Amino acid sequence: MTRRFLNQAMVLWGAIIAVLWISLSTIFGELLQPFKDFLAVTFTHHWIGKSIITVAIVFLFFCAAWMFRRTDMQTIPRGLVWLLFWVSLCGVIAIIIFFALHAF
Amino acid sequence: MTTFLIAHIVIGLIGVMASYAVLMGLLKKRLSLAFLKTAGFAAFLAYITSWVTGGYYYVLRYGPVVKPIIKDGGSPWAHAFFMEAKEHIFLFMPVLAFVLWVLFVAAGARIEKDARFKSAIIALASLVTALGIYVALSGVVISGAH
Picture 1 (cartoon, rainbow over the protein chains, first blue to last red):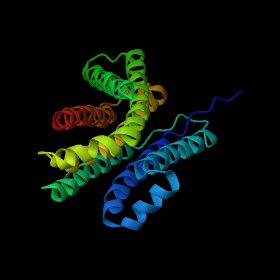
Picture 2 (picture 1 turned 120 degrees about the horizontal axis):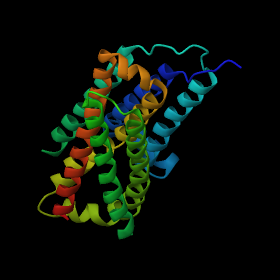
Picture 3 (picture 1 turned 180 degrees about the vertical axis):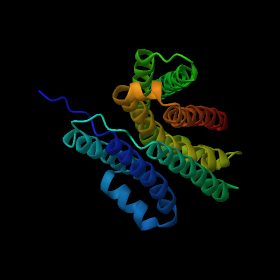
């Protein structure tokens, strides 16, 4: 029987989209009150909404990574790991600057 | 309710220690994949547990009771900046810890052989550890303001 390997690139794309979602929903949730209210009404609390959607994105991409397993041990593009790093770092910095401007 | 807060703090700190262990494990000349897989999974599991316990406390106790006290007190910025940033930056950590663990399990052999790939993984592990320290210190500030 041929061994099949998890599609690792798909897991990384799931994480990149999840991190983008966290960053954008945090900042636009503060700027667009109807969006924050929509999350709060739908999920009982805006933070629970952001959390559930984050888990859903990672879970769906992980399921896809499992469904689209490969018969070869693929070489994950190193750039995808760096992309995840930079998107995360920029997201964190954007959130810190945004709340610093709001608070002080 | 206090039990959930204590669980959130203790388990979260265990997660940060596990992330630091992952980073130190990656910086060694000879990698122990078994150690990286175990520490990586411990970090991921700790962040998930800390997420659930902290979220329960945040929604049911912090929001309705603690937040108004901090906002009306002498350090309203403790909520406006530290809590607001912390509660959202925390969401990055389980996601990144999950990716690291998956890469240790699925691409461990490549991390050992490919130095440039390993550098990217080290950068990601450093970020998770730094975020963990930032979130923990923010928690100290918020507790101090209450």
